[in-house]
Image 1 (cartoon, rainbow over the protein chains, first blue to last red):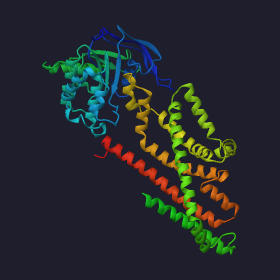
Image 2 (image 1 turned 60 degrees about the horizontal axis):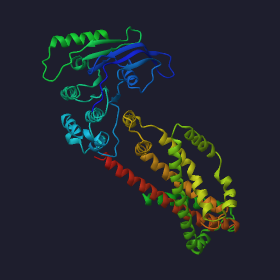
Image 3 (image 1 turned 90 degrees about the vertical axis):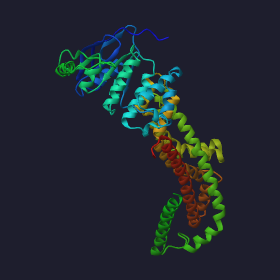
Length: 236
Length: 254
């Protein structure tokens, strides 16, 4: 039986500076994810999106502030920089690192993410987009409440990215996702809420914008999309 | 691979021999100081078979000593890679102990263990052990973050897996270090035999030295070079096979 899902995920007064540096990249940063869904984290390059994500995942300790949830969520952080070990095929590797009960789901994901033919390939034989997709699959099949996807769909073509995001929303409606992307159109269209991270001298450092939360079968309203995109760009 | 190494060795050996004879004839040195080519050849025909077996004896001790050193260095590096107190102590001990020349403590080993096989093995192993250990600790301490992150974050990381990932990712480095330390194992064995053992090519060298017989020394050096080249070639070939197999299995040769 699945555990009770957290009702919220909250970061309060987060402060952080890089080791051996006095420059604070976050100062009293506040942000929250109000409920399960596909959320976005957007911001200019170098603003600290990955750092904030890793603080949320508990991989980096903030200098001050607290992260809370009720019950406290299990957070996983995945990025496009990861590799699978080279000693086994990607299919064997994924099957080995997921709970056995999810093998069926793995097969579906491999097929839906366009990787069915890559099952017997080694990681080094895959294209960059395929590598990112297979890495994402192994994370999706773990136990988590919040999965942070740090450019997890980089180097994946636009049509496949759309298909994957819609599939994730359909398959895991009870989970939290935080999708880090540099595509303003993508986060505007697919994300429920978008946390726009800004440079430290701007207050507040995070502005929350409501996205279109596009679902499979929805029709896209162009003017709504443009308005959301403008809102994000202005906030950044 | 083998013919290249043997060729390299022969080139150096013959060059050195030529220089020695040039030195002899230009300074008009007597055959007692540096024997002539015919005497060297004559000595070689007399002692070659005996030295051949002595060389094989030395090579076998060097191989076993080298294996012991690899096993020991692997075990210690697995413990030493940890950021724990034991790990730090082992690393500190390794760095400090390697500053002390093993040859200097060789007499103590001979006094305690006698002049037999055990002393030769121990000295051979100790001489190639520290360079191996330092390299192994370096390799096993360095995280392969892009692979390990998943296992750490999902709580699947075990020490065996950590060692496997780091060793797998550094196979080429490990192969180079192991092949490089083979010469040290040979050196260690010969030094041990030279100092106090009662067998091996190093022991024969010591006898030749006592007899002031440079011809015998030259024959012994020739065989040492040949055996060392053989051992290095075997290790390099083994390393090549392992890496080739890994490249095939990881798909890098596609």
